[in-house]
Length: 118
Image 1 (cartoon, rainbow, N blue to C red):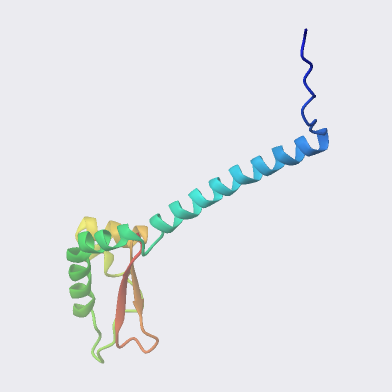
Image 2 (cartoon, rainbow, N blue to C red; image 1 turned 60 degrees about the horizontal axis):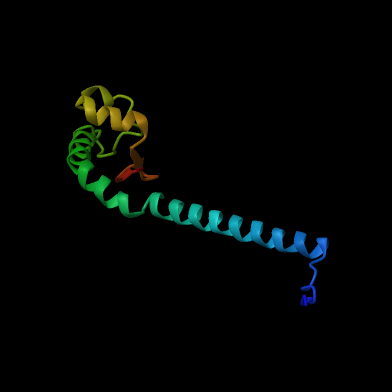
């Protein structure tokens, strides 16, 4: 005697497509989450920024000293670094030219900031 089994529930093609779509959306969600995490870790100000600042600290000190020497008679700092770059050591000049170190004089040019863009 053969035993007949009742057929299992049939999944309609529509339902199969819905399950496949949910799977694709979950996979896409994981990819987006991974990308977001990667960007958060490697963004400026992320974990690598502190190390970059420590490595560039001597260059920042050299540049700040050169800027201070180039104050005019009234004590104003230069508007830009175009005339100063020639006097910098090659590595510091390269950082300035590539935008790794940026010079930001205040609006009244009495003070300035140096920022590191890593």
